[in-house]
Length: 102
Image (cartoon, rainbow, N blue to C red):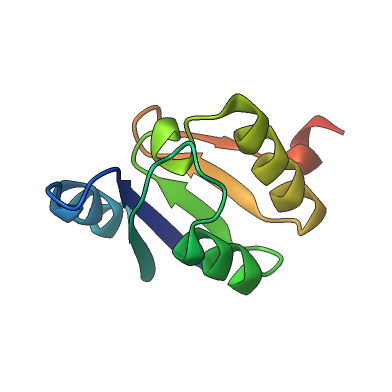
């Protein structure tokens, strides 16, 4: 299943453009969040990560929507790999999966 994650940093911003891009990418479910990308305590991201299952593909519009912290991105990617979940960055149209590199 394609599952999207859209995030904006402030309450004045809107996830509409990201949501439209994720829908056009075929996402069946989209989690939306208004929170700083440098924070780890993002309830929607945590809910999303808890719901992912083997074979799912997590899709984001841009990598920085997932997190602004490289350490957090690497931690999330490791968690995805362990769960056999693939990742797609809509902006660069590539799939990254730990299983493909082993």
